[in-house]
Length: 344
Ligand SMILES: [Zn+2]
Image (tube, rainbow, N blue to C red; front, side, top):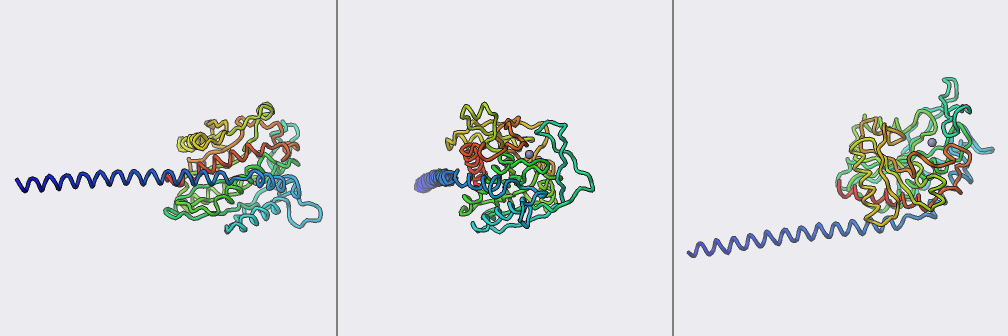
């Protein structure tokens, strides 16, 4: 009898301890969730459209009208793409990053004026000049699993076959990645966050080397988010004041990322007209990673099919860019990256 009572008391004690433990664990998870939420809200509120605008005008107007290997400004020692590299590296270093450069041999495209304006790039001849284009890398090592890597990237060069400032394509995405690097400089991630500034308007694309080298090193890349043409859309959408973003994926793993973009846009009331789209085949710099065996890769782009009326033309100038829209796309991408980092 007595023994039974002891058992009963013991059982009650165990049950209540177990219950308390569960409640505590739930509270902790809740607090952790709230903390993550608060830290994401803080980070996205630091995204600064004025800084984005300043970088954009620097890289696509004054002092650098273009960013290409085959154009050096009168009186300057370096070509305009190298000058852009120095600007980006200087900013990143000022925020405490160590910048790594990876050289890749490339050529400028030739121009075929018989083709539509947006697609006048044509293959170079072997005797055309060769240059070294650089991939720039900066990263923050993860605290808990530094081996897992989230990549945020943008191509930084402007069209090599035509005098287009490439403001939407892709000084805007470059400044977006730069702004994310600034905002995240004080953040301690669980996984490694790697920023990559590559080249896609010369040939071959340097993102191909970046992706293939990552694969041969055995890098564990959990996600790749490409920012190219963020905020770029049709003249009608611009006139109607639309703030758009399309996250396009090729593989199911990329679809998860695209769905995450939609979730964070809603959760943090960012206000984008956010859409997901499936690409029929890998494309752009995210495609380089898909082709190298990293299926969780997406592009964030203002419209798809790409609606910018000045695509690959002289009129792709910073004044025509919707900086507010681009800043919203940066906020959503940043929120997705930090959410991924905490969930990985
Ligand atoms: Zn382009």
